Image (cartoon, rainbow, N blue to C red; front, side, top):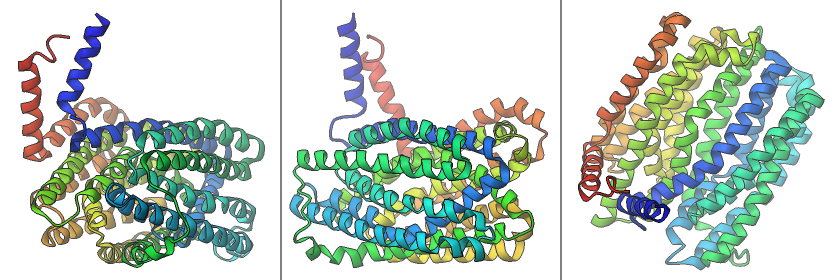
Length: 516
């Protein structure tokens, strides 16, 4: 009986996801990265909820501005190296493994040098920043401690980028899994003992553990696949830095400082750190929305890159991969945004009574996350085609929208204003980018029109609950969630839904499902 069941499972898996096929590669990679990252991010989310309850709204706002400032400095460490590693290692690992190894080694070497230099700079500047920019001298020490996130975070990003390029998703899952299991007790215990300083120290130590685990996995997987990580001679691959890394770095150099400037404007307002606390807590749930799509993007980018050459056959594979990415995005975004938006009073209550005003900002950041999810395949198409100077132009437009809407129209509204500016700029930019990349031939028009419609429909699921009482939200939430599933199915590309239905019927007809 057990052998028969195992045979049925094997036949079912092979029929749906043939080995080496686009679907097989996509599902296998997504499953393993999801397994590890779910544990890692879940543990950190649980830890941050406890941290918020213990240290309160204002001090949690200080933690938010510390991590935001570290992220701003991280722009000057990153240099687009993680994306560069994924793009070129995935493209070259089979046909030119030696060159792929040189590019991987080059990105690691630059990350090590730049990470060390910028980390030291932040340590030295933290007292001045705390007093003159962040309006709180008490955050100087936590900011200096948090500089460790720069160093370990950048190495983690590049190592994970190389592993993604190798499609070594089982190794990524293993490293994330163990790092996540370690992070929860470290962050919780450190916060309990030392408050804000302990919370920051816990985050740094967790990042260090993840870095060590990624390094072990990278050396093992590169050796197994036959991609030698050779630093000597790697500088001859410097051309990829100008073509891909420099514009990717400049694109990041627009986004992260813009976010930091908005956060800084917020904390300099009356009651600013309390409002920052509300926004930081709400923004944790945008990360929940981006969690699974982020995993899918990590898997999809190397697949798109491996089919980015100019030929009719490769163009067909490229378009098919984008359809898979969009289908996954809409299937995740609609039900998840509906669920979290209608559960916003329960989410706010989990953080404690200080966070009662969190529901409005939560709707804004949830919608922002949903739009980012729906527009992600278009961004991946730009990256896979190495059109990173276009990506820089896109981010410059976003920065203008974000700063302008928040500074001139919404600054006085605190956390709610910041989340609304974020939602407005995300929607405006996504619609503009979809039009341009479709016109340029990077993205199919049929997907662009469906994505635009999905972004508009998503407004109802994200902001609709704000017009209902908490009791009514709970009462209608099952019906709204069912409607979100139907809407997601309607918006799926016709070919995807047709193929899914045909293959399910074929499996039933052959008895694969009927005869375990």
